Image (cartoon, rainbow, N blue to C red; front, top):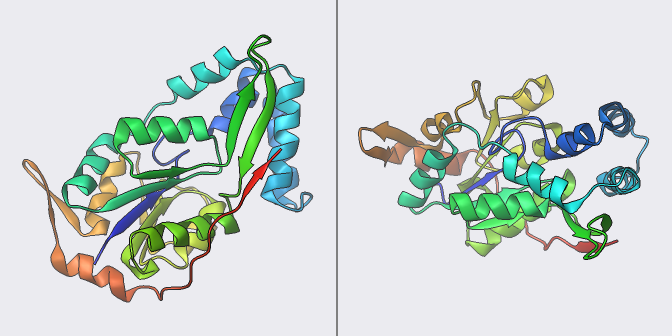
Length: 250
């Protein structure tokens, strides 16, 4: 029986590209973003925390201003069907969470606009009151293997086994969670490794297409639960233990 549905943000709840990429592009540093990403994929950073620290140092050096950052956050477009998806999940009593390797500010926006129960993200930006420039940041461990830690924590909050949880993602960093939840959905992902790791793949840009795979089917005035499909989620994965995610502050 499905109890909890968890989502990545960039590329899933919000349309691509990622917020990281948008910031670099707006600063005229798209090539630098691509080089940093390539270095990460080649294993030149010890961890995602090291990568994001290097990325933030470059963003700070480039002079990111608060109003520019706020504009990027506010201009991010929700995926088609996002509101319908979360309305349906809420209607049927399914708890929701977002787990992102991006920015707390975007996670908070998603939580407020979509009624997501919990939202976790990797970086909270700190801007100078007088300078309006990026000066500092708080960092939280919410990506790659730490995404799984947070997912286990969320499942424990709602007294749910991981087999009673679903996760929707599109990136390599979502694979660890796919491997433990009852239903892992690769949404509009072009990465073959991600598609293979998921229980099912949803192509296209309408997030509400995932509802059928969560045991929910559309009817004229909303959605109704498919009881047998929802029960089947409990047979797809074995539950594992839970531990709290740790916070790090720069």
